[in-house]
Image 1 (cartoon, chains in turn blue, yellow):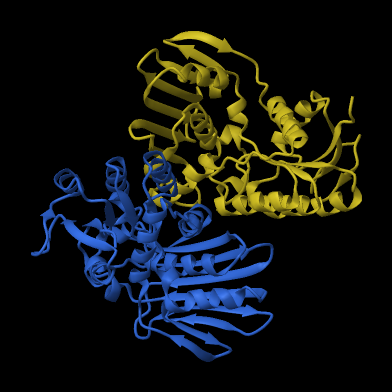
Image 2: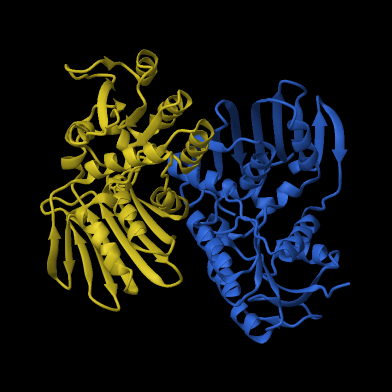
Length: 309
Length: 309
């Protein structure tokens, strides 16, 4: 058996500790060899303050996984790619669509694999729902993605900054699932953004989209929902109604539960990254980020009450 | 010699009368055969109230040119494409990037030519500047596009609506030139938008962009400039300084005038449309609109004084 691919992890925040570290431990083809993080490290591994130091000190690292906030991601990814390393990006893959397109061109020029991940596409129900939908005509899609920002993003200031996406940070997960489920390209036709008067990013948004010529998609994103949290996508078809609940962990067909599986999203992402590297391929699908950019471009904005953490 | 291609023009506003009609008259390969316009018509040609009526009544029309505001453009273009007609789009090609991507897919599926035009790319100085730049390294680019909105867009309400782009409606012309001049992809890194407190679209914007890894591009768009109007792009290189002034009509090399030619932009567009149809090709470059969408996505917004026409 061949040697595992040595990988460096950049960014050691909540998502890295909760998802990336356990997933890497469960992926024999990848070996976590070093960390870069401004404020933290792991006792068991070489740790560096930033990616420049990491790349410099670890010339044998073959791959880099970035879990830092999107605003600084381009410079880090470009440095890694220019140094000949394969790169995996947390979602969203960048702060603008054009910068990820530029990264993509750079990865091609440097002959490395670039993987823009969308972890929600690996949720348990997505693959089976997509398979069922292949034989059905989708009439309409209703997305409701409503959660309590204070619970899920306490003190995460970058998320409210320009490029941090606000409520689209979770909402883009729903968009990543829908653009995977439907065969036709999805276009945005109308958007309404609610911005707290003291913030640069929306706390709620409503989107109208269309897939193909006539499949209506409505999305409601809201960060002000306390109590029960809602992450669901309901597809009405010419056959049964298909619902993905709990962020895609649960599949219901005409109200009957079909799948309810534990979260394996990040294991699937790292398995795919390993596969892309082995095949010399990249996977950069910008459709979810494009829809968010279009929502900002085309969206009507309303100012709402100030938000304080 | 073969028959000219029969074409219908949709939208009969300022740009259609000032540019499209004279350019069509000067293009022997295209024959303007009919008009669709809600409020106006031409005495010499069959005129219809909308594109549905036009397509229905004129089954022999081979091509459609759309000069209506971008917000309604998708439905019109999709109808024309689905009816098997070639389509040319005024800039910007749509109200969102995703809807033009969807149009592009539809045109491919229907086997017709789609041409998303950027008239400023046909300005007299652009081709020669691009040729000169092929042998030079560009160090930095400075864009200043400053005009008086009251003079150029009197009473054009759509331009202030979501999807109307505000000051990016002229600014996108500069972006279309720069993305044609430079070989490397351009990415947006920072943006600042100034929105009048009574409007949904910016009256001014400042953008920071980068081409390739290190060519800095700065753009200043402003709609509040009275008196002398400014549409200029200055490129500092490892050789001479190259300046495009008057929207690209005038080329200066180290301050010395090289070209100052009358406007032939729309003739060039229609000649290109004719060529695309003959070759069975499409030309849909979304880079300029992508940069604008990214500026909304990533831009910091400031509210400024109300604007009244």
